Length: 331
Image (cartoon, rainbow, N blue to C red; front, side):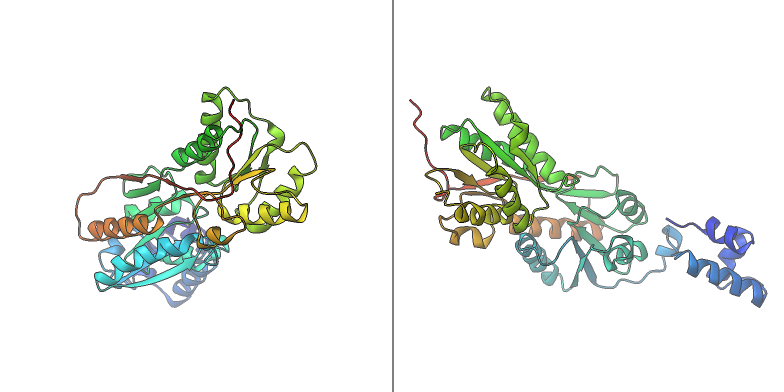
């Protein structure tokens, strides 16, 4: 993050001169003032810190930062948050973090144009969140294991979910289980994969590296991963790291006349609305997203009110059993 020293260095003046210009104080010549302002503009410098925050008025607005607003995964989370925000008489802005540091989401946090934020996106830098929260800007993160003094985490136990999903397949008699992964940088995907490995290890099953295929949580990724699986020996079951990829996988299997679950069992994760309308309806694991959203909202308002809260809240994951997994002969 750009500092006042960076501006001073570019403008060729002392830091105290930059401070006088930005705070409209002191006797600074017009050419120097213009040079400082131009340097600040070029460096995208934004005043921050406790001193300037003392003067900031409440906006009565909460920011919800998501990665991709088109994803159905976020709808229940945001709806849960919205009920709490409205009950407190606040407005809510949902921002996408797509576009990196130039995104609206980054700017709202960096400049603190809102009273607080609930961050669900993975691509907001840890340092930005830490610096903003240290300046008295309350932040709640979801699906992100960020340990920082002024940040509260609301997590759904993805490790537990990955374990339970894999254990469910093992208990149905499956010993050859593929894992279709989400993004490598996604913490929730990493935790689901760790749960998958834990269940395999407990059952004495070795992971087959050829049956771990990466994706980006999109339907097309699931379709492509399924096509890749079809190029070799098929496992008896496939665990997709989210439902959107599982839906894409079902489409690819159907195109190749693979009968689900008679020839191949499929399990997803998230329980998005479309999962129940698949043919066959998709067995999946439900994250209590609406409950998690409401909890995150309540915690954020407690922080705004200066109340003491826990630093970590965790919600359990539940199985939604449908028709895409079959019981193998266990004898």
